[in-house]
Length: 527
Image (cartoon, rainbow, N blue to C red; front, top):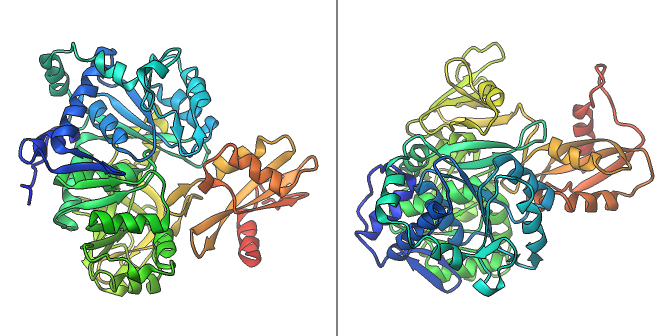
């Protein structure tokens, strides 16, 4: 059992803290490879020195394009350790999505994998190099030194360039950052369809991770992480709590239901953390009951509600279940359900306020709602983000005058004080645990020359919780299949509408806006 780490100045300090006490303990794993805490701390130092040698300063951005893999964790921790700000790029994104983030964040260094599964990113990396004049260095994570071409260099060559950096310079860079300094930008879209970068800070991530480990105690911590690296679930919910606890993160580059269960058995995983759609896929496997999941001490889900029948099946695997409600801007959890076997609590609430988090339900006039009355959920805590990257107006609009963050979600407090989610003020919906913003999809559809107007609404789905239905008014002949393929070329797969319906005209409100309520009711009837 590892000694519990204190709240350290930088979220990146935890690997070295554990390396000094349990150097041989496994920190990160992928496939058959293992990195101990001593290995991880050394890799963080080496990359941090290379970044300093490349001229990276406090506040500069460093982007990473790779699947869930130790390379991502090292890149984040090394970047954060010297006061720079890390940006994760989702390999599922199409070039236009990647180019938007790079142009907005303006990283000075891009660390990238050239091949991820069957997709070759060489051309995309070249295009991204021209997306921002700030980008000075492109580092290839999977290319040997001789294979790096043009302005790109191999990771080995980049690390070599940092060997001349003295320990005193590294220590000085680290001493000059931490606390509420931002260390990561997580992009989260908005109603305009243009993603905004939420700035999260060292203190918020470290404090959240320590508290999550206290609320959901497991010893030892061993968790599978297959979430995209730009997703808060990957970095904040899975990776950092494990590393803060001195546990092991077992990465899975490509999720597959049966292979994930095999990995859990082989690695003796103690925390089975996932999203509802994945649990449903795994429980539906014909041979599920044959998997030895006896090492599991806690089962967690986030992102959406879990059906009662699934909860009851999971309780047969492990009697300790938990869930939470949160969002990127809150550095994950706002409320939490402690480990329990109470099906009513698990199915019909998202728990009490997370320790250290204030919560209130507010009506349209700004008054605080009594128990049992629904209103907007607002939250205030030291975990809350530092604001949206280069968007002061959006940051100001996100908070009330007295410092409460407006979630845009509707909820009510039950008689027992737990929060129950009711709905959303915003149009955003959740598909497979991922946030999907209709306007982003509408803009992609409207970029097609045959499309005059597009409107996307969400409908319930038994597997993905919610999926999108696109209603499209056209100005020229085009098929639904062609428009779906158009979306696939521009959007991550979870954003692509499940159904595209072509119309001559879309229903309008008296003020000229699309009547999405009518479309939503129609989509419900026709699903």
